[in-house]
Amino acid sequence: MDKFERLAREAINESDSVSYTPQDPFVSFGFESNPFLDVSLADLESETFIEPRFKQVIRYINKVHNSFTQSLEKKPNNNDGVIMDGVIFGSSHSGISTLISLAHRFIVKTSKKLRNTVIIDAKELVEFTDQQYSIAKSIQNFRNILAESDSGGGSLSLIIIDHSDFIVEFFEDFRYAMERDFQNTPIVFIFSHSGWTRLKNSMAYSNYDLINHIVPSERINSLNDEEILEILVLKLSKNKQIQQPFSSEILSYIASKSSGSLINAIKICSRVCEDCYYNGLDIASKSLVNDIISFLGINLNKDFYNLVTLNDNTQTFILALTSMKSIAYDHGITYDDIINNLGIQKTSASHHLKQLQEKRYLLKKTVSRKAHYRLREELKTAADTHLITRFEQKETHVMLENIVDLI
Image 1 (cartoon, rainbow, N blue to C red):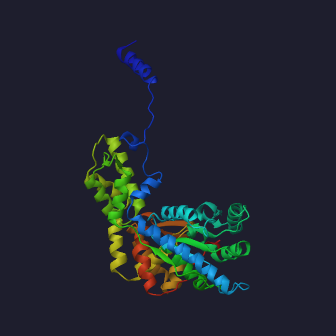
Image 2 (cartoon, helix red, strand yellow; image 1 turned 90 degrees about the horizontal axis):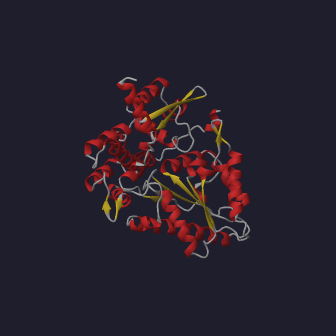
Image 3 (cartoon, helix red, strand yellow; image 1 turned 90 degrees about the vertical axis):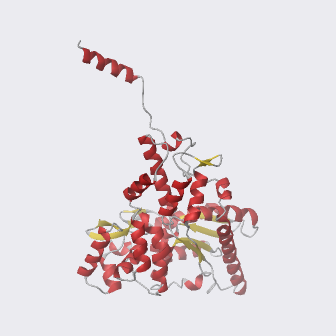
């Protein structure tokens, strides 16, 4: 046996007894686990900015219940015109689901009349198969969950439906079905701003009088840089000390680059921790953060922000339409959506879509040989916060295709 054959055999035998198990980079830096996987009550109690939003949500839910009760007392034998519902909306990726869940937790503990309030997540109950919504199955899923919640015999006080973007496509059918089965129960729907705007536009062309069946909607403000920084510092600290590979300076920088999106900030932090771990770095640098932001495509947010806040042209209108079609399971905007609402030729629509694709704002998907364009996830918070707000100020109604119309 020659020298290198012997060395090779020895190396193989030595390494057979040693295995490598990938470790969570957060754990390697002293965290018990990935700190972004769950949100504890202690965390929320430490977030000072959540307090006014918490009270805002509870006040609104209570107002919806009171409005319904008062209307019912005035018309005990006729529910026509009764204000039944409420709508809370806000920018995507702004922690609204966590806020709503917290509010529900304490509503049922502190209010006798709202003790039987139920919260359900539309994202978990809506079924989507063969490129379309399974409307009947989805509605039945809601019925089953609510029936179980009402099995104690006491009528439900109020229903909260989180991620209501998932029922926009069949909202009218859904609402009529719920009214039949749970007639005396108001519903508070939780939407993204794009989803709420999409619903209002689609209901403008239906027989359902949406506006006169809800208490005026409540908007939850998006997160600012300081609030995102507060969350990051809280989650990435141990014994009130920010853990490596992060620092106060780096977390401030990440918060400023996240464009108001908590998801963007979390993506950056997770990738920073991963890159530092695999490259043997104890402390992250701004240049590393910049590389990660560029890799994730989050650096596009600055140019996107300038476009949607400073310009008012065909492309911003197309982006507004796209934002409304980039919710839930929707495939995205089509050429027909653009042509029908802007009155432009297909060649012109193609030109604008190509430019928006080249800027990496849109993602293309082909379904049944038809092109659809969807807004990138990293841009949704900025779109909800700025673009949709400007679109609504124009008081313009648009008609957008539903998935069921395309199949």
